[in-house]
Amino acid sequence: MRSDRRYVVIPFPGYQWNGWENDLPPAVGRYDPELKAFVLDDVFRGMEALAALSSTVKSGRSLAEFTSDPFEN
Image (cartoon, rainbow, N blue to C red; front, top):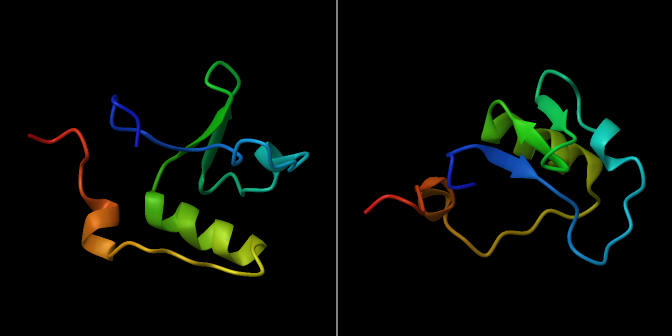
């Protein structure tokens, strides 16, 4: 989550994923060339779309921690 409260997807630094900005469906969000990131309309739909592209899905966090607002005081 960015400070403007938008969820974005970018490739992991150093990981080559050519064409990644076109791999997520338009129903999930859109690529923002200024941010060089895919802006998600819905974080959960984005996670589902990314999981469908991945051979392994791992998370070390709880759902509550994942969905919490890191900018909330």
